[in-house]
Image (cartoon, rainbow over all chains, first blue to last red):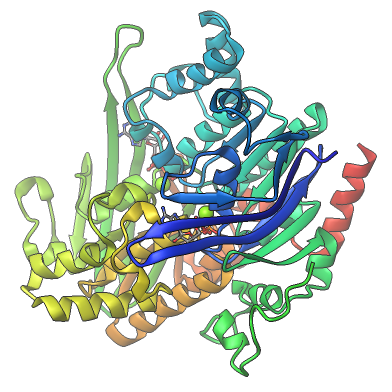
Length: 285
Length: 275
Ligand SMILES: Nc1ncnc2c1ncn2[C@@H]1O[C@H](COP(=O)(O)OP(=O)(O)OP(=O)(O)O)[C@@H](O)[C@H]1O
Ligand SMILES: Nc1ncnc2c1ncn2[C@@H]1O[C@H](COP(=O)(O)OP(=O)(O)OP(=O)(O)O)[C@@H](O)[C@H]1O
Ligand SMILES: [Mg+2]
Ligand SMILES: [Mg+2]
């Protein structure tokens, strides 16, 4: 049984210009100990599909799926209170915009400890010790002192690491990491990726890694899903994706790496499809 | 060639107030940084998370004062504490914040976000504002359907592009971009970097470009400054820094860049299977 299994997920938003379909029939699954990377166009529904799993979309969103199961349990049909016990504990998410996701009114220590209190029922001193341990693990210097900082007193990358600490606080079975290292330099990025891999090995954690960074894909993923305009263009094991990308979209995306600059210009998808080839024409999976 | 931006020994300390449980302390975020940027050139700043890049960006764009040190823009010394910040200067120096969500008013539609600066700074009539905002949306890869949406109705990368579009609306001459492409897919990133390059060619724009992505830096920078714990530990032309890094931190940084070649992937997968 897969840890997470999604079939034919559709998410639509009410907008002033009518319904907008952000996710258009996406299916995917993740096993224990497995890392599934999701890459693809900005705005292609990566974050929205994962927020649907978490049950965190605004009321303007209409979510349907043939199946959305965590550990065999149907997420769409369980009660709110049952879902709240799972979300944040067994399924945790590192949100894409860390500064906006933290509460500006509380210290970061309070916010981490609140997760530990709500889901694990730890007492005060245990919470504090665990919070220090977590900040140390994500490479924040002077962790004990830093617990008293408010989000605006920390850098972008420090806020991102606080988010990561909160997400791994309860040793989740499934970690959804939405662009978890965008604000980190490559040395700290490496430290964080190593930490996540270690958690996988130790606890059998499964992971969904949303990223635009092909280096991060190469260093973490087992399998990769490529998304474009709400649809899955391609699914492949990580090695095949790099050695032999099959969909037109994936090939064009890889061609836009800055290292491929010819002269002064970087190739875009539009350049790649100048001859009129249909971008989304050949979805393969 | 004329120098557009000069920083001399910029220092910034933050004083953190104590509470019942902790005593106050001082964070030395920027510890005496100096550099110059010529007109029409790009200085890239890289460095460890928390080393003071965003703090410096806010000082260069006249949002926060430096604790000490001097800032010169187009040869003129600017001290915002002394009221040197004219309306013209405010238009010419723009910033793209690292955290675009926090810099957008949640109750303002995107069309108005882009149009508003034109009201404050130019009294541009409404239909021209609309046309210019629409054109700018398209340049950053968004569309007409986005004009009437609120900030929360966008993806992370779309919001990042809105922040870039807003900064470009006023035709600044100096633009400080703090991690402006970190949320963009490779193709949209290419489109935005090409746009910045075109504008630089056409209008001689000067950029300070903060980024953690070394391949982007290598592509866009004329000069590179590496910061570490508030200090500039390396500063030189792009080729000097990339081909002959002097400081240990720079070397560590280059060595930690993830590798995306099949041989490295195979080796990693083999390690995972063995574990
Ligand atoms: N509340 C909303 N109302 C209307 N449209 C929305 C809303 N939230 C998101 N969208 C749209 O849904 C689409 C998918 O957004 P999503 O955040 O999933 O993109 P993404 O793939 O994560 O992109 P990025 O890589 O830029 O973060 C986008 O086109 C976005 O504009
Ligand atoms: N308002 C503040 N009060 C106290 N300390 C602050 C404040 N703002 C930033 N700092 C501290 O100053 C240092 C530099 O922060 P800054 O945001 O400039 O880093 P950065 O180089 O932009 O990092 P990142 O790459 O993670 O965005 C950090 O240690 C941060 O915690
Ligand atoms: Mg997203
Ligand atoms: Mg920063």
